[in-house]
Length: 214
Ligand SMILES: Cc1cc2nc3c(=O)[nH]c(=O)nc-3n(C[C@H](O)[C@H](O)[C@H](O)COP(=O)(O)O)c2cc1C
Image (cartoon, rainbow, N blue to C red; front, side):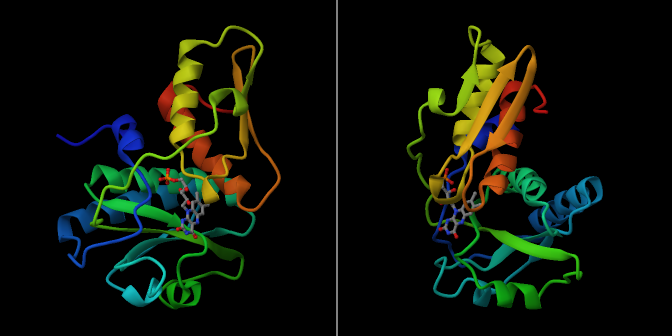
């Protein structure tokens, strides 16, 4: 049996060193399907790049595969939200990953993609068989990441615990969730890539809580 999305959130850690072992065809097909679903559903243009170490040479040891995160310019939060689903699917397939904004050769990646004039590549999810499973890291405390005026409902706490597992650029965690009545909102603070981070954190919160974020 495969792992649930909740289990995948807990098991996922950034992995920055990979085995040379190729990803087998059946897993390739499953990931391809997931990327197609996302592109259909969200109007994104995520693209798979297989067996191309030059995209990562000198940046992520041994990495040779990635999902290029291509979408309409300015769609940072949406790209983040759906990149989270890519990360979790990869984990469910028994593979490891790392989100990269800097640690890849974007020109090499772009050569292997189709990019429309209204599109940009915000980053990539490198993936494959890690030499390790990665490890848990520190998080800001929950109180620093949310505002709740009433006693915190259990579902909201579960959402925050998931959001604390969400990867963010340089582990910056510059997002704040709020509960007003029964509506959840979330905002990004200022800084580089904080909108992407917010999208990822919202996806994790929704999976952890079972509640939509406005
Ligand atoms: C938008 C974004 C950009 C990132 N860019 C890089 C990168 O260029 N290089 C890198 O090694 N890690 C990068 N990371 C990975 C983060 O450093 C990592 O997710 C964070 O430290 C939390 O660790 P965890 O993923 O193990 O939970 C990025 C993550 C995100 C979400």
